[in-house]
Length: 330
Image (cartoon, rainbow, N blue to C red; front, side, top):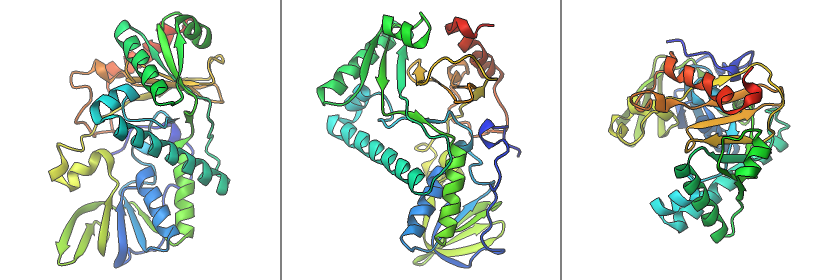
């Protein structure tokens, strides 16, 4: 099936890697999936001299890594106050520390290899559109302050000044957040991994993994590989290879649009509606906006089909910017 068109993959060369004409018969580790999780795994393993083969049914970045909002936000999965309630403060702080360390590792990789991926850090603000969201914003600001973490609270007047909109009741600004071109990062990381000895094989679909004593056999449409370890970096498609995880790793389809170049609006990124909508303006002045899945009956939960787009979500995304920003209404 042909995936939906992605701005991030337009005119991107070198997405197809086949390090060797045939699959290797053996590999210490086989990684399934060619997005940021799979490619970074292949990069780190090959950096340590471990024999690793990566298999991807499409090209590199063919899934979520090549079709997303382009944000970097070192944070817990939900806002910090909610994460502290869900997991406890100690676990939430550990997750947050890991996220920041991951961001620093990303910066180091980009610097070490002179990676051209439009990486910048100008912050992200979580904006409140209603009183319920404002309460959560305030709670998170207080929770961050309690643990000496950085999060700048914006009142309604500051939101109006910074966002050029009167629609937001308050916000929480994260200075450590940024943006990038994800596919450019990962394709260049894939090239580095290959240079370190990793074997990347795109256009290779894995059907299943079989146990054979102390070994595993990865069976694909291009042949079998014997290995001791398999890394499933398959995101929302994991349930097709590991049905026992179908209720644990659940796909959620997102949708993103990009505009023509618009008037300069914001250097920072923003999210709102509890993170359902997320937006940034690129250096070329195009605005990238994602979200609106709440307009569908099932919130797009359980859907891994990226060959089509939802008409209601598209309509909601197209209406969002002119609704909240008068300068974008023409």
